[in-house]
Image (cartoon, rainbow, N blue to C red; front, side):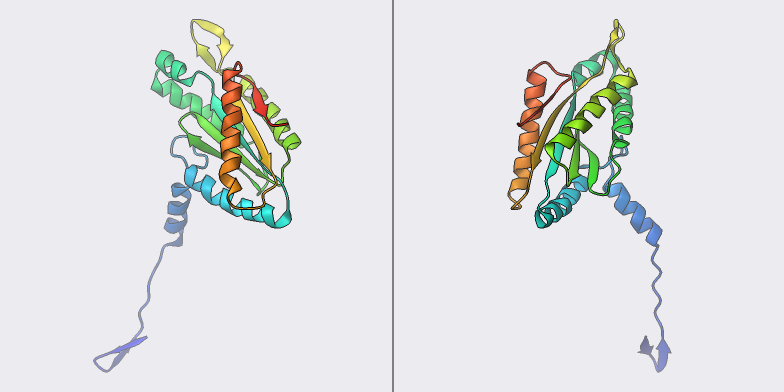
Amino acid sequence: MFEFENTKLLLIKHSNATQKIKAQINSHTDALTLVGNRRALDEFLDHEWRRCTRLRQPISALMIDIDDFKQFNDINGHLQGDECLKRISQALKVLVHRPSDIFCRFGGEEFIYILGNTNLHVALELSDKIHNSIEDLHIVQNQEQPDKYVTVSIGVCSICPTSSDEKEILLKKADHYLYQAKSGGKNTTRSHD
């Protein structure tokens, strides 16, 4: 309330909460795959890292890369490549349900799960489900070889966090194990002991 020329006036501001919520959701969603993007991943990881540190619980990362995706795009075209990314992301996002888990597009043909309060054994069980889900999609890699399907390689790392510095270590190790999976024959999972 304020006064102007001896008249008391009330200022009312209208704000559309729905538009703000939609804008926030859109800023955290990958436009192509409709799963979380890097911003969503970073914010979630910060929150979940602090929670797991406080509770002294493990946190796991599964880094996933579509095998031979550049070749898939070169042979089938980018529209088919986009469709492949959409199908894979939709199949994989339904594999986690807890509020302590997130599935995001990491970039290009890479995806990532962050699983709070999850040890390596449980993370590796999810890895098996991921391979099975991709296999069930039957996405043909090359029309000239209709029995060769798209596959993924996965790197898995679990850490019991003690400091915020280890967040990058979690992601770097998951990426390192992903590289091992890809260089070791693809369509496989690698992790630490």
